[in-house]
Length: 78
Image: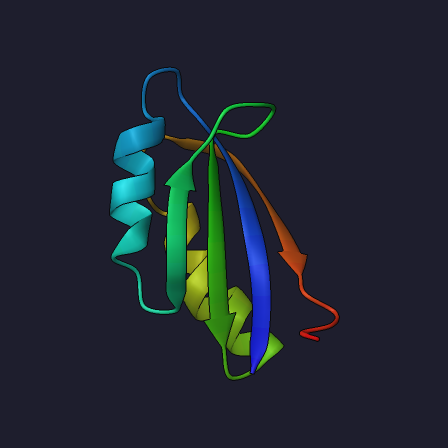
């Protein structure tokens, strides 16, 4: 199992809607709108890195209102 945080910047005023839309994507375990340099932080997981990138991150990036993403794979789950 591979886990990652996906940091998302959105169009102005779209953070809550993006967080809600992203929460429904398979592989997303948590999605919250936050303050700071990013507007939404997502916890995601998949069986392997390829699936994470292709299926989860790929689906996230298609959500309307997203302007930029940064994917941070988790290196240790201890």
